[in-house]
Image: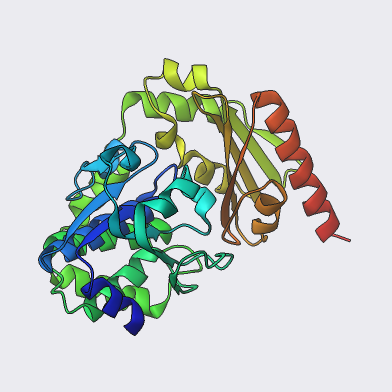
Length: 320
């Protein structure tokens, strides 16, 4: 931490990178850090490979992102990757390394490849929790806007403080963030009670085609790119559907596949007790033991068959 703090204080211009398919943790962490750097009199640019979902638009700086930072022609003092287990999580990651003098890796995934010149990796609730500690170490006062961004990062990656990564310290930090004046009710409304009709229709379509495997222990659903477009939504807004599959009684593993406009298939895995990280890794992805993901080439039917086959094989092997 001390080495990273010294490095940041000695630099002036930063590229802050979210991962593909940005979620609340990478978005909240990026926005919180950019606001903190601004307080230090430094400049920063946020890079998001994919559009930031509208549900996060209330977070300061969440809409001020670049999709192609290499086109700026700038060379930044440092590139900071947030919530990325490896550079594959940043689209065109091999180019990202060339955009700055120092590559900084801040993450909470236990399978992190330590790809940075400087690595701050801890197996805790969220990258937001790490960024909170970093901001404090930088001597920056956490104001309401920073607190809001950190709170979003933590609440989304802990499933509203429901998941097993919710520690005593998470609640302690959340209490400190509330003291900064954030409106937790308004945040919850923005995140969970402001869905479009299209999102609900997409959810309904997904729930109407649930498939069960291995005696009902595995639940699978999917949406094609054409279906997603027909509902007037984007792929990033479909991330939460997999949690509905996991909520089914007796389901241990939930698998949701969604096809993107370029034909690739993004897969979200969730579980109640099973280590699904091994399934994601077998498909070239990664993540956490209870929440992981992978991306496969299309077509959707073939990707679905491969995902189900891999999940069944690993689940069955675990029972022997």
